[in-house]
Length: 259
Image (cartoon, rainbow, N blue to C red; front, side, top):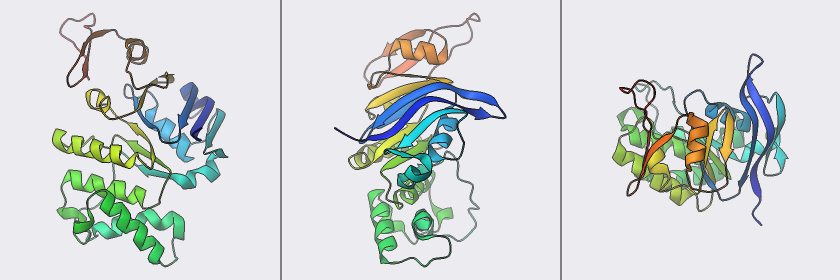
């Protein structure tokens, strides 16, 4: 039986004593590719912060690969939604990817051959090896995102967390990134946050809807029940081919919500 990458039991978490997540229960098997969807403010990024150990739970338990978060997070790589960087600063692709080794070597220790091999593999995985000496400021949005994924992979994680990895790229690049993630999933468990409902259904293995509470059935199907609970409005249409969801009209007939 596959090992549990993530085990969350009766989790409550939030900020300033106000809960954002309420009684969340989730088990992610090692080797899974889970997408979390849901409205803005529903707690998706908060959940990642708890898994990373950046936010203490109010109640409940979180375990990573059978260990508490403090120990288990050493096997976790993270790609944030936004990376603040001065694009005029002369830093190379190689240097950014090497930052992923800081957790392995420490801030003031020299990098060694093992670190260089890990970074080379990560850059090859994301098809950025040939641009390793290119300044980051000269890259396209999609290329930068690949470098940030390589930085996370350089830590040689067993679990990769991504917060809206395709938020700032065009549709063609978005498809390439999802293809990349599907290939990486052959050796790394992946959990990502996304609003690309119509795209993720073609790539991920399981889907959960999060809006303070988690609606998750351990399968890849995005059900009408899940969407109605998470978005609190009925589904008007589920299209086939390239799947997408359109929500029903609200009281104002001029307003329509779509994903």
